Length: 149
Image (cartoon, rainbow, N blue to C red; front, side):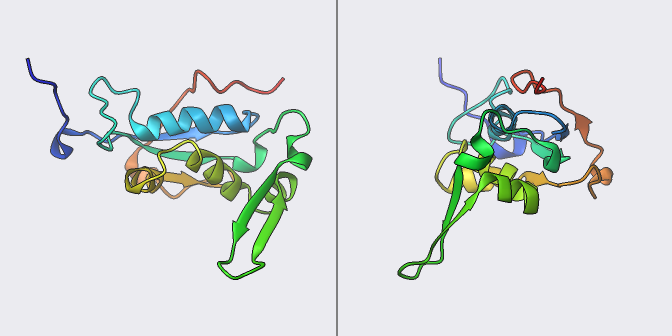
C-alpha cells in the first residue's frame, strides 16, 4: 500500500475567525499555528501546505501571563552594525498588538519557505472589525486557548 500525499488541487481551504479577547497569547498562537499548518485535517502532510486561512480579531485584548509583558523582549535587526533594536512585549501590545500576535504565531511555524507561505494565510486585526466578510469565515473555537481568569 502506498502512502497518500495530498495534491494542492484537492485541498479545500476554509476561512476561520478567532476572537482573541481574553485569550492567553501563547495558547492562542499555538492553536492558530496548528490550523495554519493543517494539522486538524485527516490528510495532513508536513511537506504540503494543507492549512486554512485564519483571521484574528481583538488582538489588543490578548493576555500575557505572569510578568511576561515587562520581562520579554521582541528583537529586530536593521542589517547594519549596531542595528539591534529591542522592544518590550508591553510596548508592543500597546502600540502594535497585531504585530505581537503575528510574531508569536510565526515562531510556531516551520522556519522555511513553507512556513512563510502558511504565515501569509494569517490576518490579524487589533479591533473587532475585519474586511473579510466576503469569504464568510466560520467562528473557530480553540480547545487549547483558554480565557485568562
